[in-house]
Image 1 (tube, one colour):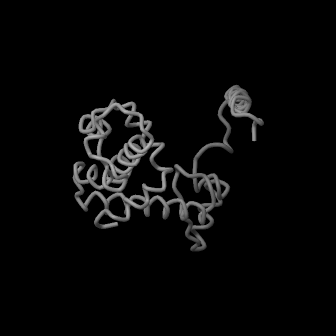
Image 2 (image 1 turned 120 degrees about the vertical axis):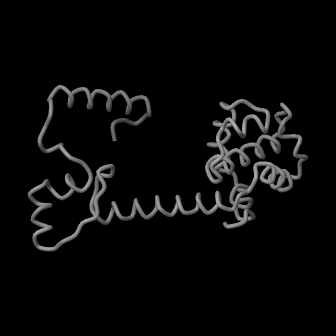
Image 3 (image 1 turned 135 degrees about the horizontal axis):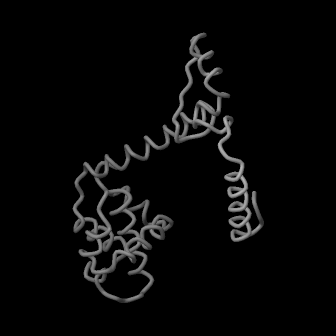
Length: 174
């Protein structure tokens, strides 16, 4: 919206925000979520008076339907996360399952090797452990023997690998 390249868009957006800050506080931009999307307190009060209910969340700007869809999706993701956490899969059990899927030895996770199969296995392990089972980066880092920064990078890369979904389906409670 602000430019063809990421850098150009960022610079244009920074200028846009800087120009807006210079204009000071504006009544039409006060409030968030439902309040802004319906047109202000007056309209919202009018809705209440005639019995129209709207779903709102001050963190989300948009119509009632949009807010409901966003919250439902967030709730689904939380339900999955809690269901997997309750399944109480130990980090070692996850390591064994990922190693089995990638046909590698579990000790390979601790090696400094850069073989594609091992690095992909590490990425899947880190993604599921952190994002799905709620383990901390430092716990995975200590167990696997890689830095917390490497674990963090692996999390974002592991989400995209096809083996991730396959292994997640094998976890009890999923």
